[in-house]
Image (cartoon, rainbow, N blue to C red; front, side):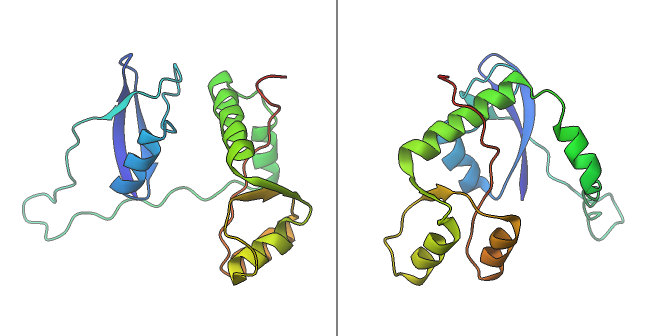
Length: 156
């Protein structure tokens, strides 16, 4: 993972984590890197200092581990609050892109994902419904999938 300090065309500064520099470039070019303040997609990386060990230290201190996830009941309570407008707008945009570029397979999602994975069906983006257990089984089988919050469309 790579951490970037970012700035939008309006001067708002924020940060982001990406798999690597190629992932950042792809997401930025596609307009998926957005300012959390104004929603602008004209974003640039800021000059960053590398982690350099102090004199006399042979290695840099390893980065701290992220905090453990809160218990399930805390997560659901935190998610129950109002969603910030920028997050809602981003999720609505993501939904529109998924609906535009992927095939809806409904409750057959797990079955169709397996067919695609085995080469029995054309490789393409799909979306639909699946249970938590089915999603975990797909991951164990080496099938990549992602879940996104499915918010109401922006147009209604």
